[in-house]
Length: 369
Image (cartoon, rainbow, N blue to C red; front, side, top):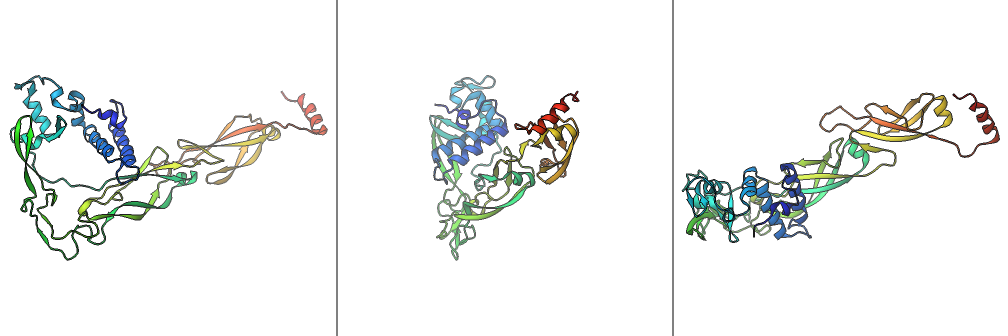
């Protein structure tokens, strides 16, 4: 049965590439096999879906034909053999894999020569280290002004015994006995077109043609081991909860000294008793008594930068908002620019009055227009 890649990633068919990428990172982080709660089968399924939907060309073909060609019927123009258009078939063979009756085939390897494909068969692709995605809790003012944090990650790190090369120290590098130094070997595949002999990457030497005479006793040839590592993170001023930062090369180490993955950090920002954030602006509230509101006053207002004096004009009504320019949140991508602080005024009416106060208010009532 054809898989619904959109359903696997939990996204609509109208999702943008950014939404697809975000959904993949979230699910991959949740189901990664390295985690205690990880699910290797689910992780592979998520990765399979992303490899198709995250590629514009493959996504178009998937949206048009589904996961398999045999369910798509005729392809229209060109030579037709039993409902297949060979030009479309060749185009698909140069762009990725194909599944038939539950078995996956690389049509580029099988038919590249038939259609003049320039794809190099049997060439090893670099296996990068996996990305890591975490969420970090920070307080309100750390998000406003930025901060530096030291975190400890349990991650794949370069093996300190073999320096990431995978060979036991002192071990010789020999020609791979399985592929004879070619880096690839021949494999026979039974397909619905018949039996095909194809070349695959040698699993013993990963396409390098050479291997250690003895693999590293600590990492068993992988060049990386699980370690706890301290990482210093610089939080930019003005970061918000819906934003993340990328720290290049601080994900999992790549196998055998290959390129490491990246670390993606999103943030959980704590609330503040005095302040509320709305985009680049900060809102605070102050109370005034009726005398201050009626006659005006100068009051001290707390801001994220410290206290300032705010002039209250006479006749100020409850709900009035005063704007303190450049006292808000720094703009993340525009250094030197900040939002404003909005000060909302609430006029408090006294619930208890002395006789003298009541008499004065009675006399004042006739004067108020």
